[in-house]
Length: 412
Image (cartoon, rainbow, N blue to C red; front, side):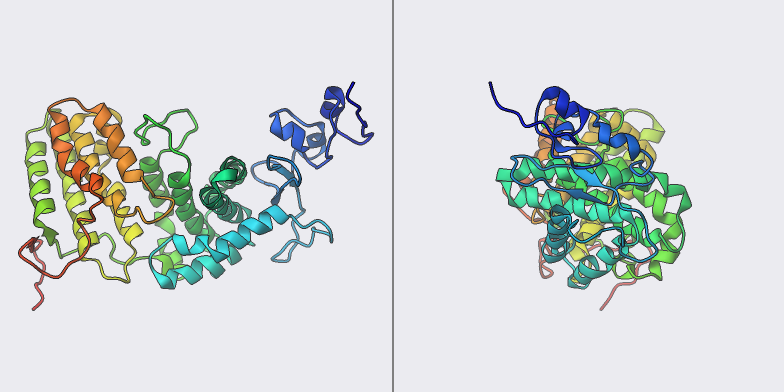
């Protein structure tokens, strides 16, 4: 019989199962691993609630899986909690923070001026707001899962634990946004987008519908976060993270496009004008195509100092609610328009957290459509299959169609 050294101070679950307990509080690693309630948690229910999430997650050493055990730390008045005593360093979370400030922060944008804000200012805000720090650690953990595929499952588990607590606190505090905490909300909202796209994709899903009651989808997520933050924009514009904003991202007077893209969007607009579903549906399709043309043109003509990620995500925000409703109903016209937006997502393929998203979404749209609708997505399919960046800026040439929006002033 296998020998067993029972710990007198171990949890009741480990004693019952006759396994060694690591005695980490508020929940030992064995209970976390087997998704059972640890009796260590009985005395920490208040501090571990969504409104008071534990500060840091502690990794177990020597085991094949990460420990998601947490040690609650009482709040102090100082920026960094004084509740941590010598010898209680959480090395796993320090590793994640180091990962964020040395590598991950440079992958959130193509703008060098925003890199320092993500590297220094955002983590500094995180020391004041647990939900933001947990969002930082969650994204860093997913980045490590990408960089270290042999340990991907472990890092994804850690990321999920941090993200759950970040979202709980984020949602609980949503109605108490102030001039002081709005910057943390703004930073976390950006990290939520990164996290959602970086999470493992589910094969065979369109990724914009609710698979389970509490699941999130990227389209509604981007629109929802933008709506929540709208009242705080004046504060953010004058705050420490104002450099992350991109003024005028929704405005463009230069609508030049390469001829193939321009021709395709014109055909798409003609399709929408004769779509079924009534006048409201037709108008929603037309508005979605107009927003897509603006998005295409903004990416194609943007300057090097403009954020391509922020530009790419203008389309989900600008499409009307009716169009989102038609997408959820899987109307073929709506799916065809979304397929063309995949060309925009493909332009972000150089970011580890967006890698393959355009192709993944387009493949699932193709499976949803039948003939002759599949013919309508031939252009985006060929563009992505050939790995073309059809919206990359090139000098004015015969292959580019210069047009003007009504009322715009041409430059000479």
